[in-house]
Image (cartoon, rainbow, N blue to C red; front, side):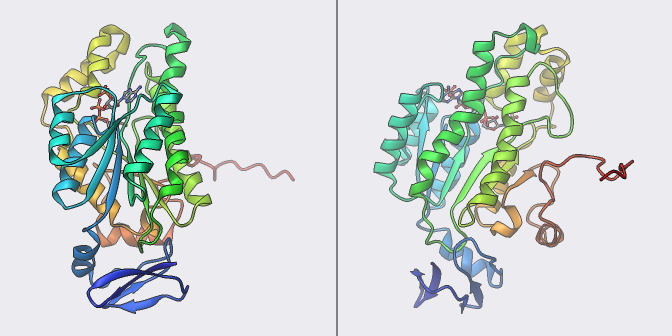
Amino acid sequence: MGSRFDKGRWSTFIDTEPVVVAKREVCPAGARIQFVNERRYLSVIKKDRSAIIIAASSDIGTAICNRWKSNGWDVYGTYRTKSQAIEELNTLGVKLVHCDLSNFTSISDACSNLRKICPQWDVLVMCPGTQNPVGPFNECSFDEWEKSVRVNFTSQIRIIHELLPSRHVGFALGPCVLLFAGGGTNNAPVNYSAYIISKIALIKMCELLDAEISDTRFVIIGPGWVKTKIHNSTLKAGARAGTNYQRTTKKLASDGCTPMDRVLDCCDWVADASRELIGGRNLSVVFDMWGTEELAKILAENSNVYKLRRYGNDWLIKNEH
Ligand SMILES: NC(=O)c1ccc[n+]([C@@H]2O[C@H](COP(=O)([O-])OP(=O)(O)OC[C@H]3O[C@@H](n4cnc5c(N)ncnc54)[C@H](OP(=O)(O)O)[C@@H]3O)[C@@H](O)[C@H]2O)c1
C-alpha cells in the first residue's frame, strides 16, 4: 500500500511497485522516498494531516499545536493541568482530552477518547516530562523515582502501544512518532537518574520500534536547553540539584537557550523526512545539521549514526574464541 499523486490529489494505492508522479518517486509506505520536487510535494502533504500531541499542555507541545494548527493540520492532544494555554488551544480548535500519565485508567480513557475523535493520525508527538525527583538516587523516595520512570518512559510507550493501531499508513512517508530526549547520552548527569534513565530508554525504544515496525517512522529529538517550565523542578530543588542549580539559573538568564522556533523547525523537518533519514535515530536540534544535503548523505549511508552504541569497541580486542 502507498500513495499516488493523480489529477491534483494524493490517493492510496495497493500495488507494491514504485510509481513516478509529478516528478517525484512515490514508494509504498515506509519505503525509500526520493525528494525530487520538494516544494510541490510539501504543498500537497502539509494539508489534511492529523497530529496527536500527548501533553499538549507542555510549553513545547503547545507551541507545536499552534504551529501545525496554523499550517492547516487537524490537531488533537492531551493535558493534565488546565491552564490559559489549554483554553487558547481549545479556542483554536485543537481537540483535547484529559490524561494523567501516572494513572493507568486515565491513560486508557484518554487513548479511547483520542481514537474516537481522531480515528487516524499521521504524527504522534510525546511531550510529557518531569525532572522530579531531583537529588542523589539513594536519597530519593523510590516510589517517587518509579513514578517518574512511568511518566517519562513506560506510560509514553503504553500510549504508543495503544495508539499505533490507529496510525494512518496510506500516506507515502508513513506515520511518524516523535519523542523528546534529554541529557545523558554521552555522560552521566548526577541527581536526575529517573529522568535520565527514562530518556535513554526512550532513545533505545525508538530504535527498537523502528527495527520492528517498518511502515512507521520513529524518531527522538533532543531540543537542547529550552526556556520552559520543566526547569522549575531544578529551581525548586535548590541544593539537591547540585551544580546543575547554578548552571540552570545561568542558562535560563542567558541568550544561550534554543529558541522555540528552532525546535518547531526541526519538528517540521522530521515530519516531512523519510524513514531512511530519521528512522530510529536520536537527533539534536542544536548540534546536528538536519535539513542539509550533507547530513542526508551520511544518514542514508550509515544506519548506526545517531543511535546508542558502545564507545571504543575497536581498542584492545581479545583474540579469544
Ligand atoms: N525544556 C528543555 O530544556 C528540554 C530539554 C530536553 C528535553 N525536553 C523535553 O521536552 C518535552 C517537553 O517539555 P517542556 O520543555 O515543554 O516542559 P514542560 O512545559 O514542563 O512540559 C512537560 C509536560 O509534562 C507534563 N506532565 C508531567 N507529569 C505528568 C503526568 N503525570 N501526566 C501527564 N502529564 C504530565 C506536564 O503537565 P502539567 O502541565 O500538568 O504539569 C507538562 O505539560 C519533555 O519530554 C522534556 O523532557 C525539554
